[in-house]
Length: 248
Ligand SMILES: Nc1ncnc2c1ncn2[C@@H]1O[C@H](COP(=O)(O)OP(=O)(O)OP(=O)(O)O)[C@@H](O)[C@H]1O
Ligand SMILES: [Mg+2]
Image 1 (cartoon, protein in one colour):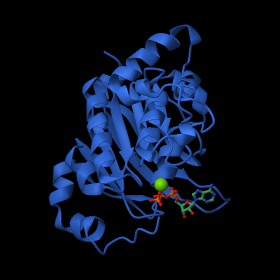
Image 2 (image 1 turned 120 degrees about the vertical axis):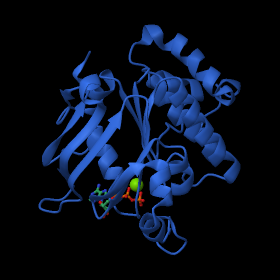
Image 3 (image 1 turned 30 degrees about the horizontal axis):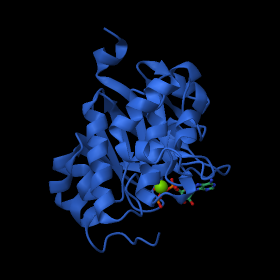
């Protein structure tokens, strides 16, 4: 058995501290644990550091302290392409497709080995039939929901074991929000471990094995998704109608 199986965690952050500007820490001592096969959701107010956490896991922001560990291997300081090769993919919150490229070209950009691209593209079209129907369309002319599916498809091209999703439902019409969450479930059922950040906190926690509440760059609450939903403090502070201001 691998060390990941022994301690239960497939992916973890240990005491992660990170920021963009010298001496300003955005994340402080963040511990996150993700077990194989789980869906784990991170919620928290705007500016809490959720995107920064995902970026730090994926090597886009260099941690100042702490570690990122995948299957027992320390990934801290590795660049994103090396992390992709180790089985982790990332879908950014914004600007996550190449607008002037077609759907199929976007998917090809996600391939690690060009020799396998055709098979992988076929597999992606099975998950997202809409992408197959529109494979020659320029990504920039797709609807928001279609673009989000394309971004997820591209991230799945290398057959990752862990998928990091930053706000997959942000800005989408209700029908697409539901479609995206169903796809996330489907991808998870196919064996991919999911870590997602979501504004749609109730819906996301409801389908998650576990969740974390991040506020001011630190862990505030963690637990099974349903328990967080039922926790009166979490509900009052982070799930209520007036607890957060969405200005995006
Ligand atoms: N590239 C950057 N340079 C400097 N500061 C940044 C940068 N990106 C983010 N920040 C700051 O880091 C803090 C956390 O931002 P982050 O994007 O991680 O929050 P978030 O929880 O994802 O918010 P949202 O819910 O709005 O997406 C904010 O104060 C933000 O202004
Ligand atoms: Mg964010």
